[in-house]
Image (cartoon, rainbow, N blue to C red; front, side, top):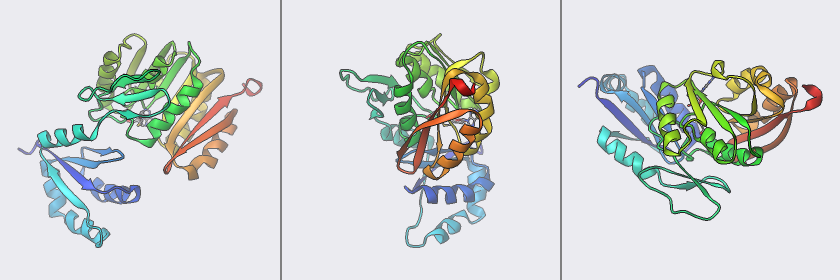
Length: 284
Ligand code: SAH
């Protein structure tokens, strides 16, 4: 019984409270978080959740905002799966793309590419602003024939989208061990075997040079990786970045310029930002 996984769903829409909750929950060794537009969930093995309850976690939630108590729901796996599946329906993420799960196929529409993505525990379903922003930037970046690196590939969605737009091949890397298997399933579902490859880890798996790099990770990880990105890109290479807020844009642009990139357009959705930066020939 102690290995049973307990999924806790919080009725908690706003991001700031999600961060506060996450900080309270972290000391109790959660197995993971699911952070999407419509749901925020945390999962524990039963023993850890019991320890959190005994440690007074529910009182601390109540104290956080007495007027808007956090609604805690313990879901058994089978109910959690159902709630999760019902929350994921086809979503139009950009001009060209609809993302749909296998259990809810999308109706075909002329000119629209349907990607079939089953997310499981990985990130990248189209239900997060940063995924949608990256898809829109990719539409502007892929002309045909590119080699693409997708850092933090999650479900593989951006790598798959890049090839669907005409890239010759894409390599995805992710430090999360769930991601490789999940991305490989999604690659097969979309008929992209051989054109999209994924590795567990990070950019040490990047082989050769790339025309486009997608990196939807955190602000600090993106900034730390700029020198590596510059070294992995071909001259005139394109770097598409997200995972940060509009307030971070100035720091991201400064870090980009320091490595010879020219920042182009920023795109915003809610409190998330994405940025297209390019290597210019004169600085390479
Ligand atoms: N590319 C997908 C998923 C982004 S979520 C999308 O745009 O929707 C970010 C992912 O990056 C997570 O799966 C996380 O495990 C992974 N990640 C975080 N830091 C990383 C790093 N330094 N190298 C590789 N992957 C990383």
